[in-house]
Image 1: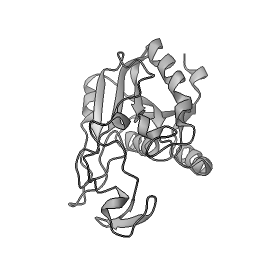
Image 2 (image 1 turned 90 degrees about the horizontal axis):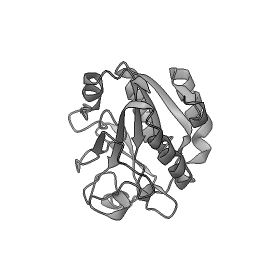
Image 3 (image 1 turned 90 degrees about the vertical axis):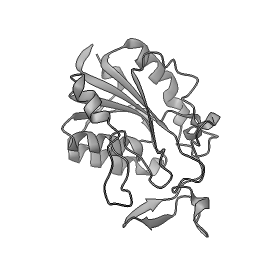
Image 4 (image 1 turned 60 degrees about the horizontal axis):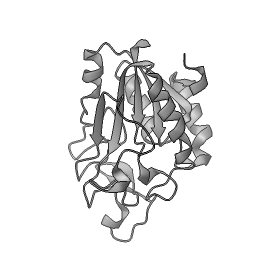
Length: 211
């Protein structure tokens, strides 16, 4: 066991799988590997995030007249990508994926619960009306348990995984992405995502390399 590291499983939910409301490219391909990794219990702590939007969330394209999914609008002075309705609270698409045994998870962190603020990262919500990015409380929770490093898996590689590891670094944690256990919304983004991660000093590893 890595006694100073946490595994962070990001948004492994049916709405992000093929056939879901906001499908990631080959998103279902990571499910068996994540299930196997959880069973190995390699990490001091294991955290799962769950996108959990109220109906009519500000990020939903249908809430903005004349706008379509994947368009961008200015929101609170910053660009906001608009999405199809997804991971609406208490729907099957928002559930944690049933193909994974979640019993080893120590904390399930629901994010995106505020109707007026989007939330990609496990550590902080996106910018809100006051210009700040409210904390989810995860950083303090991990520090209290002696965690200094995270390994991120899940969806989507080019959005929530990327934002999570960027915030982890900014908050003083070492950060790694288990590349084969993530998938993007847009596969053409992979080269840019990898370059960004490498430029930040994020470790890029394969699940087979984990001890």
